[in-house]
Image (tube, rainbow, N blue to C red):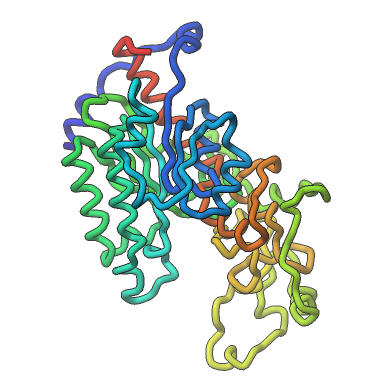
Length: 383
């Protein structure tokens, strides 16, 4: 299978003249498990038409609709994907033309690296990966891209991934091996590793550079020799002031005791252990060292989790101020523009942000897919 894909990809790309590009139709996209819309926003920014999206969480749906839906497009199916008939979606949105790209990252808690021992093996949320593929099999997009956490590659979750690949091949798709991508290598000011699986319909002999080459690096020599940009750091997040009128300029309210702990924590990267706060449980073990730690502005930020606005859940304390990071700070780490408003309150916003695909990373990945399909269409004389 892989050899066949490689052989077909040796065709020479046909250049598309600038005037011809204007005549090409916009590629179409569907976003499953869309959350607040990081992947959808990336697709729109690159120039795709997001025709439809599916999301279960009501507050995430509010955010998605508020920021992304204009005149009914994308059509947001707000509800359980297990109760949505993919055939109906196909008839409503793709009766006259096909789907080019299907995106989506099924909820990943069952595969989280924070699960220990056998936890997550029988998590019913893992089955959502297979519901994702029911849409792939029905809509038959030319390309699909699935995102998940690295824990999906653990041996104990192998049956789920094997089933996904098996169904993909039976439906007529070439599936690239799962790849782990760190967002910091693609212009995101955050250390964030996620797994991506690319599937290409077998009749689409497009050439892909996959994964796309990194655009940023932390190695000065590599950066200079390969013309890469230096990693973006947390300084990019905190150096620009947040407007007081920004509804997402909110952070957790802490007790006087916790604020004093923050005051005693060294600025710009200080840890809980350095604050002098010792709890009874710390006499037996040191606990999670990043908990109540300050973010270091000189480095890419920590992974924004669903609890990123809570300093008790990780290194989420402001670098120099004595409180946790705000919703807007967390959104900036995920490269959402300041114009993007998260609804539902502090905790709900944090969850939406932590579940999202960083917008700038999504743009890099989708742009490569778009480029490959455009070149293939030009070669085949399609518009």
